[in-house]
Image (cartoon, rainbow, N blue to C red):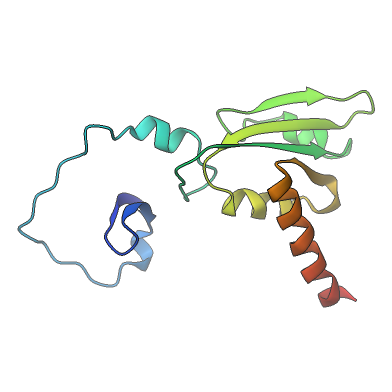
Amino acid sequence: YVIGYCHLRAEIRTFSLARIVAAQPGKDRFSLPEDFDYRQLSGSHFGVHWGREEVEVRIRFARQAAPYIQERQWHPSQRIEVQEDGSLVLSLRVNHLLELKRWIMSWGVQAKVLEPASLVAEMRQMAQQMAPLYG
C-alpha cells in the first residue's frame, strides 16, 4: 500500500499498488503540508482506510471469544475490560470504520457493538439485510 494525496477526493488516501494499472513520472514536485502528522493519521486506523475524525468504539465479546481477543493487540489504542461473566469489552479509538465493521462481523454472534450508537445502528441494519440470505 502507498499513502498519497487523492486529487479526485481531495484528501489523503491509501492506494493499493495491485490496483494501479499505469503510472508515469511527472515533473510536478510536492512537499508535505506543515500540519501533516503521519503518526496521528496512521495510529488510529484499523486496516488500510483512513478518516479525519476519531471515534471511540466499544465492543462486547462473548466469553467464548474473550481468550482470542486477549491474546493479541488488535489496535494501539485498545483497552480491555474483563466482565464478571467471562466476556470482555474491547475499546478502540479509530478514524475509519469500514474494516472494523468487517472485522466485527467476522466474529458473528460472539461480538456486539455497544458504542457509538451510530455504529450499533449500522451493524443492526447489516444483520437485517443479511438475514434473508440465510432464511
